[in-house]
Each structure stands twice: as C-alpha cells, then as structure tokens.
Amino acid sequence: MSCSICSSTSVRVQKPYLAKSPFFIGKSITKCDICGMQFACPMPSNKDWEEYNSSYFLSAHGGVNSSHQFEFFSVGLAKVRFRAVAEFAAVNNISLNTILEVGPGAGYLAREILTYFPNVTYYVVETDRVVHQKLNEIGTHIICEKDINKVGPIDFMIATHVLEHTLKPIEFLNYYSEPVRCGGGVFVEVPCLDHLYKKIYEPHVQFFEKETLEVCFNRIGLKNIQLTYNGDKVRFIRIFSFLRKLLAKLESLTGFPFHWFVVKYWPNTKRFSLLKSEALAILETAPHVQQDSYARWLRGFGLK
Image (cartoon, rainbow, N blue to C red):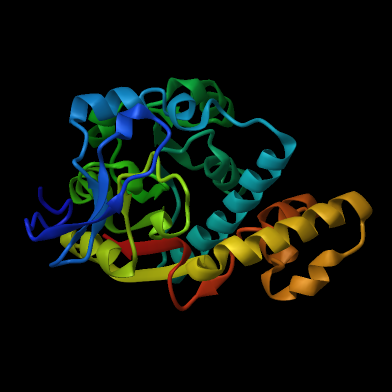
C-alpha cells in the first residue's frame, strides 16, 4: 500500500470508503504521512477501472441528467469556469487557438469557450461514448487518448473534475500536459476532500487539497501556480448550501428576490453573462466565491 502521488509506504487508514456500487466494497480512505495525500485503498486495477469508466455516467450517475435545472446549473458553472480560464489566459498573454480538454462530459465548458472563441480548434478526450454525439454537435474534435501527441502544440489543457478519478494523478497530468507549448496554460479543478461531507464517496479515488495538488503541479514542472478554494467552506456545506437552495427554489416559484438575503453568494450576472435562471441554479454551490480554507472545490492554474 503506497501513496498515489509520492509513492511513500508510510500511510494510514482513516475510515471506510462509502459507496453504493459493489465495485468499491472493502476499500478505505487512506492518508499519506509524508505528503498528506488522501486516496482510496486498495486502488482498482487499470483494467477494472477502465471498464467502470467506459460507461461512467451510467455507472456513477445512472445516466446523463437532462433536467432543466441541471442544464441551468451546468451552463452557469461553465460560464464561471470560462471566466476563470479567460482571465488567467489574458493575464499570462496566452492566445487561445488550440485547446485540449480531457473528460469534457457533455461539453458545457467547450460550448462556452467556442461561443466566445469560435476559431479555436478544440480537441477532447472522452472515454464515455454516451456523450460523443453532443460533443460532435458542439464542434469539438474527439480524439483517442493515444493520439494526443498528434495534436500539439496546445495553448491550454483543461481537466475539470477528472483528476479525482485517476489512479496515478501525476502520470495523468504529465501525459496530458505534454502537448502544451512552452508558456501555455493548464487548468485543473477537483473536489476538495469531499469525503469530509459527502455520504457517498463513489466514484472518486483521489481526495485533494491545495498542498497535494501543488505537489502534482510542481512534479510536472508548472510555473506561476495559482490555487484557490471555491464554493462553500467544507464545514458549512450541509447547512448553508441547503438554505440557499431553498431560497433559490422559492424565488423561482414566486419571483420574489430571496437572493437578497444571501447577497454574498449571489453571482455577478453581468460579469459571468448569466441568465437569472443560471444564477439561481449555481447559488447553492457558489463556484464563483473564493474561500481562505477548505471549500467545495479546488481550482488550479499553471504555466508550462
């Protein structure tokens, strides 16, 4: 039993791994004494993990969610992420001509970027074929993971909510950042220690916070690293996110501006180009809000 990022064998079990699928039976959350990384143990084999993820949306979520509320949330979240990418690119003089996104899902972020930068050549690696039709409709170029060396040089590599699903995070980052040109950008977003507040940890096998994601970025040679905690602080997630969700639902039903009661968490609709329905949908999780300690999400940028 060894650490998934520093390979130390000085690790200790923290608690049982909670899941619905029998695939995760017998696993635990384990923490490295050296670097602090937390991960599922024992890790599944490469073959078993590839099979599980080949139908990820069905295995982990029972299919692709297509409700109106989920659509509002996904678009709103994509707009917040797009703004973060655009601002990092502008500050670091990165021209967005070619992008590689790994694990784009149904392509919400890709669609947002292509709306503002229609001439971008947008490559995606997505193992779940369920969403390939949507990705084709958006205008992305679906490629096999074995072919990323054929698409360089890349201006930006993006992986949102993917790294927590990988068995070897540093190998993953090293491989997919290889086509990024010198001076290009890398954007990674992951949940932050979500086993601290979730009742079910499936399907995540890695649990990051700033220090451990920074180890990964340093190991692949990134510079100008920027890491932020976003969303609710972990210790308040169950209480305050539920309250904001309730207020958002009441506002949707009545039209009364209940978000006035939680103005700190109300997103700037003009800055993020949000419709009111999208702003209400992301009010519960507040991906636009930065925190000074463990929060729902960890957002990381770096330069190659």
